[in-house]
Amino acid sequence: MQSIRRRDFLKSVSLLSFMVLPGAGRIQARPFFLEEPQDYTGRICYNENPLGPSPMALQALRDEAALAHRYPDWQNTNLESVIADHLGLDTEQVCVGAGATEMIQKVADAFIGPGDEVILAQPSYSQIATEAIANGGAAVYIPVDENHIIDLTAILAAITDNTKLISLVNPNNPLGKIIHKDDLASFMGQIPEGIAVCVDEAYFEYVDNENFESAISYINEGYSVIVVRTFSKVFGLAGARIGYTLASAEITDQIEGVQLYATVSRPSHAAAISALNDSEHVNATLNLNAASKTMLYTGFTNLGLDYIPSETSFIMVDCGVNAEQVVETLADQGFNVRTGWDMPQHIRVSTGLLIEMEGFLTTLGMALDTTGEITSTQPISPGITSLYPNPFNENCHIRIVTRITEKVSLVIYDAQGRRVRTLVNQRLNPGVHNFSWDGKNTLNKTVSSGVYMLNMIQGGFASTRSIKLLK
Image (cartoon, rainbow, N blue to C red):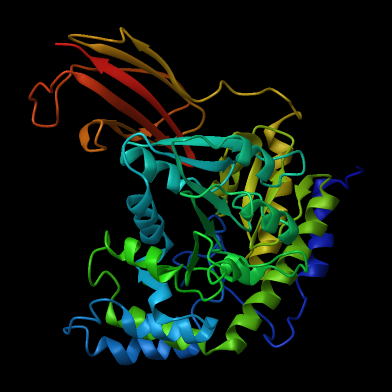
């Protein structure tokens, strides 16, 4: 692929910055380099809606704020009823909580206990693995195929007697690919009895592909399927924290059985209900997303970079160099993007306002100029690399490897999934790190003999190993 000189790149980007969005008008924002911007301009790392909430949702937030001293609908039935009507389901098939984050946790709590397994793709959104491990279960990672698509055949082959849950993210995050509807239908027909399939559809509104189909249709067909959705993305309510699951009444009862009451505020309820009725704002968001992706695709091509075409509001692009250096340079100039997922040369870029995309592409070109020659050097594989001695009596020495500077959690759990002790909960630099566990809990009391689980989490990466304590 031929690339233009990066110093000349600004000209090609500027031409695209004047695109007008049908139904949305000209989108403006303060330049990223201004001090104290009104919003997080340049924060293109979390797949947030750059247009924010709809005007109807904002008005609902203001109106309901006057009743913030009153408790909300304890069990979210007001919003659940509206969602059910919107999707043609029964209210008993909807469970609302504080963002998709809470709902994923509750799915794991409902289905995963000690010794159980969840199967998920790699790379993919991996919160479900973290929750499973916290419950004393295990996570089985299945690599995506050569086309960056979740490998359903390999997932089926990985099913064991311990498998209780399969997690599919469709479209997938961070790769932005969908599962073909025919492949999903064949897959669902082969799932053994006693296994639930959780389909995370956080980005389904962005998909414009005739080969995509929501998993909602499987609910009333009797399948053990749970669909997870959110108001954080296309509806622009990430800060309001509203998510929900869709499933049979029986499965919904199981999820509600492990849920806390009143986790969603009155203003959030009102904002979500209003957002569902504002199709104009949704259309404006989708138009901006399409224009932003076109701008990024053109920019990446002009820079000579390979990228993975996306069905979502983010794109993975191969920088051709160590992505961590690129990320740091971009951050210094006010643009925050993500990297990781065992893809050391890729960054994930969220779509944003067109002026943000213009500035980002220009800065990316400059960052690549200063990063150095393209390299295929692979970093050391991250994870828990050594436990010695194991079994142990007095001290178990633990060695882990981290690949980037990021917060790392290293936690000991017992066989029932209860947290025993947190060994690490801080940002660590790339490299090898040594720790030890003396067989004591948080209160410095020696725990009983048995098998314990050591769980390491770094960003989207999770690793677990068993430790045996003998006293």
